[in-house]
Length: 353
Image 1 (cartoon, rainbow, N blue to C red):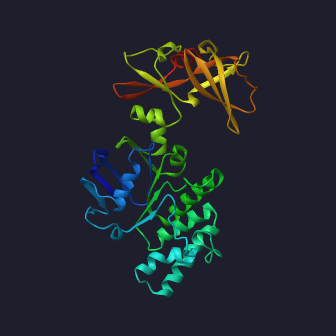
Image 2: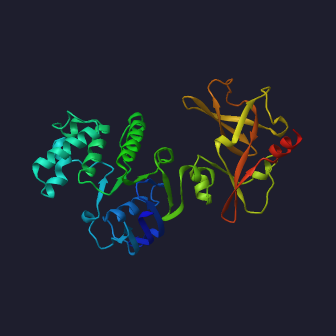
Image 3: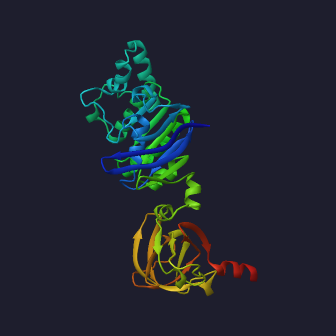
């Protein structure tokens, strides 16, 4: 059952239409990502749920109740800001306790709750430190604890990992996922990082130019993009106008284009064994990028530059080298619909076998 619902939400900032007929719902206890490029409207949506902005039209519903005219402080929401917004001259203990003291909670209850949260975020012993004495990851955890202090029903996080270095960011993704699962609290976080959304979220709301493009699980969005934007935005896709030039792909309608992801492409050195050798085409390596456990190979073929991934254990491929390229599948855009098209030679060879 839906716990948070947005019905026909519109929001303008002067002449700028920031949110355009937004409709989606979130089940209780789910961790949902608002994912999109900068300026796509995701933070505006988050702030309207929080009560920090008011929609021009439409309804924000929480637990079956329209909250448009209810102050954010009375919506049962905890908010973690992108820059954490910790009070510089307050200790960790006082930062976490701040909201409780504003509500005149007895000090004995304040101490009990703060100690409970310090244990939850694994920051025992840091209660007397100031924010400047904490690492970025520790500050993020304290901000998380402060948002949870008054037992909110919804947790909102605006780019929660943006200010943290890459290694700590990966650790905090796992930590956040575990904490929210443990607490079973409905949570919504904003991000422009698709890897972050796919790894952490139960469900993703993809936004673009103030609209919702698609809502679904990470697997659904990745495997079945519903719009051209999602097909291009998710999965590091490359747009190709002349996909009919690739072998075993036929143009169905004029004006179409296609999107090709790295995992749709296999690149082989000349002489390497290829299962679908008769269907491979020649390309030229124009770039290679070391990715740690793999190497991204960029190949020019039919005037397009497409990417593929090879293991670091495979034979080395050099810049300018002629290679064999096999495209397994691609997404075709037809009348604003996205269709997954498989290389027809896959079917033909399987029929022969």
